[in-house]
Amino acid sequence: MEQETDSLDSKRLEINMCMQMHLYSPPPTHVSDTCKSSREFCGVAPINVENQRIVKGNPASPFEYPYQVGIVPHFPKGPGLCGGSIINSRWILTAAHCLVNEGVMANGIEVYVGSIYTDQAHSVPVALYFPHPDYVDVMKGNDIGLILLVNDLVFFRNDNLQPICLGREEDIPYGGKAVVTGWGAMKYEMEIRDLTITSTVAAPVLEGTQMPQVLQEVALDVITTEECSKLEDLPSDTDKVICTLTHHKDACQGDSGGPLVAQLCDGRWAQIGIVSFGVGCADPEHPGVYTKVSAYLDWIWNTIDVNTC
Ligand code: ARG
Image (cartoon, rainbow, N blue to C red; front, top):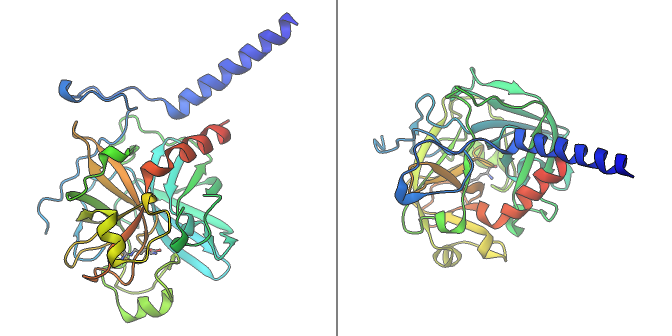
């Protein structure tokens, strides 16, 4: 009996230590006093999109988006192109439609980390992937998924690899700016339109010049969901999406699954959205639609808890 308690205790300890290894990292050292945050270490990124100089974005600078990953899902119909984000040493956040297409799971997922240049990012092995169980198609919402890596990413002293914070509802800057990044199309051209059929599936990998070699960044205006629903057909649970609308600027095919981030009051960055869908790209009458991360925090942490160790 005593022995059993002992072994249970040691199991618990083992799990705790393991959870700590994956989920816990020390708090940041420079959090201003007026803005104490209990968040784990995350979201430290030297993002600077002020020069304003995706569609009509800028190439990113090295180290600016250390949480950004590139994802290539392999579907029976062919490979796709998506983005994603590092949320802790083992887990990548992306869109469900980057993992499953018309009910068919991808038969392989490649994840690339560690560089803004497609030819310098390196591939890390994937153990498992989890589209949200209630995902059917992007128009019905729940376009969110998680990828479990085989090995831990090492953040220590690596400015190319860092986790992003997960945004809460109060972090969403309605009426303000947020930043989206990706290696997706820089122009919504005929070819993209024809190949993607609808803008609701993972974009196929395209040959040619319209896909950038360098990660692109663009600052966008976050509009209220009320405004958005006047312009766009949204999933019925409108509380679980966020929209952006900015003249000539938008995410586009191939950016799906990528992070939309907003700055926290302590200077760090939190992911508030996941690129989900849009009608065309940068169309003045059609907002970009994102899965609202804060609406899925319980699902994210539960999935991670249940599948860690
Ligand atoms: N579904 C697209 C993809 O798989 C993303 C579309 C985003 N479109 C937009 N206009 N914001 O890459």
